[in-house]
Image 1 (cartoon, one colour):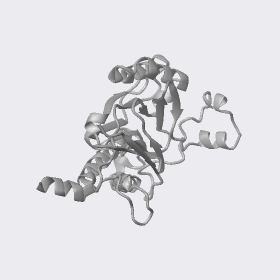
Image 2: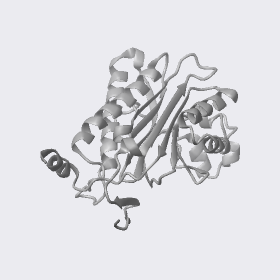
Image 3: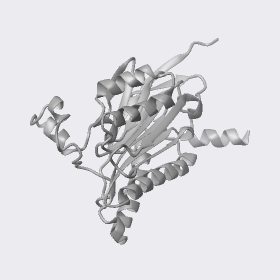
Length: 294
């Protein structure tokens, strides 16, 4: 057998020989719950293993407007990404930047979701002022691209260590960054839910992109603040590690922990385990078309 070769480029590993499909390489489990205090759930989650996409939104607004905003957001991003990825490979290089086009594709669909939510809030009085936080992740070419707005978070568990990948867009995070409060004291702050960015509030939206290399054995967590406000990161990490063999049970247990600790908000969790390498096929759309013609 030929020797297995690993190339490193732009923080991603391109592994030869043949790539493994995303559906074979990723395991996904989702769980969402209204919590103990809230009467209805304004969170929304979506996932599609075949395209390596997970989306989580935490809505805000009066009556059921937050539920509408989060539901619209996850639906638009998931639907539009499915359409785009039929004809474009996120690992293909952008000729202008020399970098993969994945982040741009993700941002374009987030912009469409923002426009849809904003227009609904402007034209339908019952939805006035609605918006949502967002965290989404796109897995491709042995890497993961996170995009987030607000205080919904992305984490990575690797070799027993839980790392927060995203940084909150919140007043509390700005206070931490400016040295006005410590991370320890921040856990007891009364200003946890004051976000500085949200989707659907303005005509323009500013999503932050974070790119990471993904390794087999990694488990990625996307969650609304109803989890991390109720459960310390240490307990989140220990739960993920202890129940790593059963991803669905791990997701359910994280939600249960938040409820056990008070469940003051809606709680949503998406877990993604990397099972195998998933290097991008070479040649993108041209290679696929040639393959169909053979």
